[in-house]
Image (cartoon, rainbow, N blue to C red):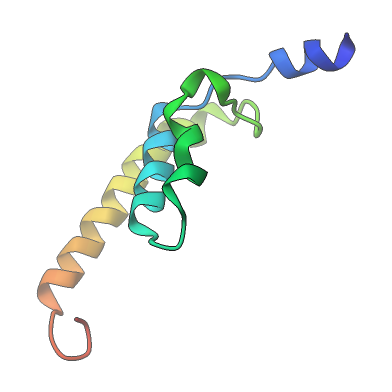
Length: 84
């Protein structure tokens, strides 16, 4: 009974984390679709990391978006024979 109670205390995963994992799996051709089917059932997933620092959690999306934007800009500016 204690194990069940401990398992039910986990928080659900954040939608942004799920979307990041889905994007990564979609871009990785080495993983079979059947092996990533679990991502479609959000009710079966949990946040095993637990509650994180609220300051880090609130800043994380902005940093991630900035890094993705910088990467896209870098790819646009430095596209050529060395950066296909």
